[in-house]
Image (cartoon, rainbow, N blue to C red; front, top):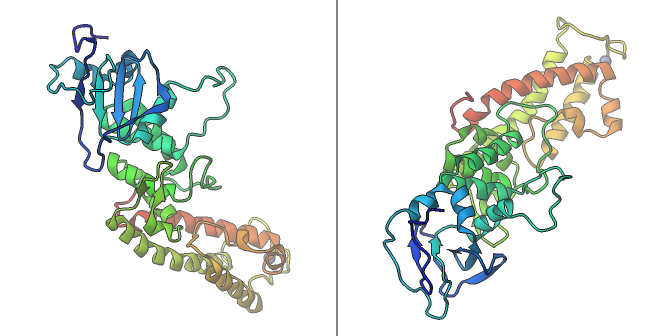
Length: 342
Ligand SMILES: [Zn+2]
């Protein structure tokens, strides 16, 4: 700690207006956080209606910006509440209390945290969001990057088969909305095609957004919402067209087969084709959301699957679908008005 900066003086309360975010207003009577209030703490953070009393050295170690702040002459010094005496600096931050609580959990874990036998880490969306928002705002590049890297695993820019289960533990379907907004905030546009695609699979939530644990609602911007509506229509068309193109490719007699048809080459005859398109049409019509990157076979009950193609023809059809999936994935950014993936 820099002993020359902002010396602690008994009975002195200091409030530093560090940043300004219009939507946050400090409550007149903030309450102490249940977890992050230590009586011997050396700094109080007032965030929305919550007070966190923690240790200044820890804060400065992780957030160099605070060290810099305290090294400057303090421009604003006054008593916020004559009935409260903290005997330590009080810093007013215009952030979400939820974000600070989530971040402090990382640096000051619960007392029963296992030290050597860690369970697989599955951070919640709120934790990831807090790391990115606060890391971005307070120049904590390492934690911002680590959280963004985690999102890149969940929202890869390359098409992956099998696809990563969505949503993972700690996330909700509508968390994709928050991921889009984080990508916009940080300029990490490689996250956009995949996260916007996930938004296209939402129902009413796509307009209503999602609600954080503290009741705060976050929505897509009107521009991104419009992009999703346009793309959703196109992706629904593509879902059916992809079945058609895959059928045509698989039924091409000049296409090299790894294994022969087990139904005496009847899988691609006219009667069979009629059945296929009836099945494909019915599947596309019954989808609630556009799912162009899921194999048709995976939508079908076993009896329908088994009476449509033989096993080796289904295998060849899947190969053709995957070729189409890769081609469509390359075009996905353009559906949202984005540049192609770099
Ligand atoms: Zn066959």
